[in-house]
Length: 389
Image (cartoon, rainbow, N blue to C red):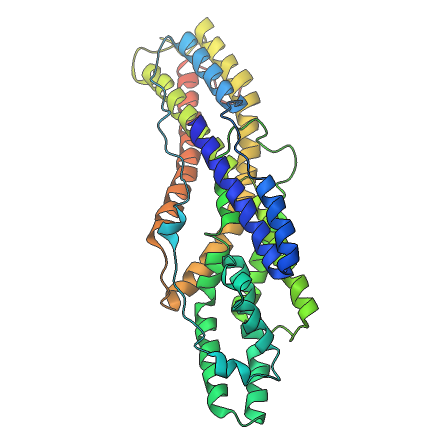
């Protein structure tokens, strides 16, 4: 488990390097060399570590329950972490524009010509999905004006060919956004398992939440009116490119994986603790009469001092973070997946399976929380105590 997390942190370094290269590609060759050098300098592996206050609190709570209830339960620590599938399991294929060199030369009065030239350059061809998405958005945006110019120049066949290529790109746009975001390196690092949970729950606001909201807003704009942006100058497009990549970089810093890891710890802890209480609920009563005994009072004190004041306080912060993250993620995913299905674009089954595993983990944790509270209340009621006391 610990070494697995360290290896995944190794993958996060790859994601940082990928982001650095993408930004460099859009700025030019000289800047590319500097950025790639800096990216390689950041490429380090963290050692295996374990500093998990949340796990320690659950172990303490379970030990106290075992002592006061005189029951033992095997730990439930085999709950799988929902790892985002490997890139090769999520690969997508896209159509080519079909515009050859001769066609390109005839677009001499179109700003689109520069975009195609940059996209077909060595740096452009080796850009990641985010860089390619930016070129695709530029292509779609500039195509309308270019079509008018080609008609004015009497190049009717080329204008029709450009129109057809633009329609293909517009149809594939949901999948291109999907590739640049949900299965890209920044979102992958957002969901990766942390080395430990020493800094979680977050003391402050997750820096990725504002970036996720910004991405969701952009995504809706791109999909609703993909060619509605003004025909920006090359300088404006460079600023747009940097804004997109910087936003993805902020998403990369988010704690989605920490949230999943924490809920995984909570689910294991709740399941183990509930099994201890269940043995007393279904077996020998804690109290023969509905009157408190020293053991019952001790049990109530354990619930209050450890479960409510420590674990529940942690759970409240984790659940709030989960709500904030998943509300935005649902909007991003639902919009993209619905449009991909409507346009008959391939949705990797591996992503759907992972999405279900992720959501099932969160749902199971919520249900385990409710079940544990109900079981504790049932045992307290057996002794004439109320769960609210």
